Image (cartoon, rainbow, N blue to C red):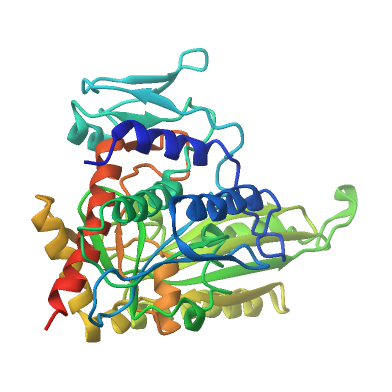
Length: 414
């Protein structure tokens, strides 16, 4: 049995290290502070008995648990990322341990009146009687994806300590900068050498995902013309007004707060500007490839129409694809999803097979030749002050990793 105290201590040791990534940086990792946890993880993997532990010049970590059987089976991998989202601060994380959660409001920060309530976050009620780890209301927690790292390290440690559990060769990989879409960019799939892998980067217990959004980022720049406002008649062009026209011309109900399940969206996540120039930053998401392409064309067409309306180029729109739906790469090898599903069922976990309303390293890795479905890590409310993770979910995820390793060996025995 995996110790609850051991899981908590390991997880807390990770989340109290600030690893926030920076989308405006061109280095890898994007922030120097990611090295603090990366180096710790490399040493920890060595200390628990992993082999071939390597950390490269970009902070990508790989290690091997050798096979303990005398026949050939596929090499499998488990992958998580150690950076946290720049959407909310990850500095000075002060985890709070809530034992035997009673199903009522959790006061995260009394002084600031910050409350984690099941009236708003109904999923909390799934975990009555369990141990929760929350924030103190002033930072994110970092369960995305330090819970996944904790589970992978703990599973490897457990397998090393219990050689009676038979398994083939297992590779583990930890990446920087996943939260800014670059986690797989410099991941060496050939060096990793796995036939397939699983990212431990999902949310609720039981989640098993092999579909994700197609994703693109768009930067819309609007040019205005500043003159003295007292003499601006027929001369001033206010870029902020034109930007507002652009924003309001996109489908208002096709935004994150109005969509769910397989519905795509346009998301304006940053705006800055003045009379002379305004910049809008969007992300575009859709599971369906044709709808995804159509969304991009909507923005391009709108740009052309507004430029035509103003009689000159007042708007430029640059769109760059970020990642694609991994389903295309997973469906030909669905047995890797079946193994994960069976592992959960054998551990009395109800599999929740669903599409990710986001992306993981696994989506990009699948297109680089490493099929990589996503498995729950247990956390909820990622990227903000209301993030929490049930310890029991982390323990179950750890057990799922061990069971997948065991099943892969058993299914290939003949």
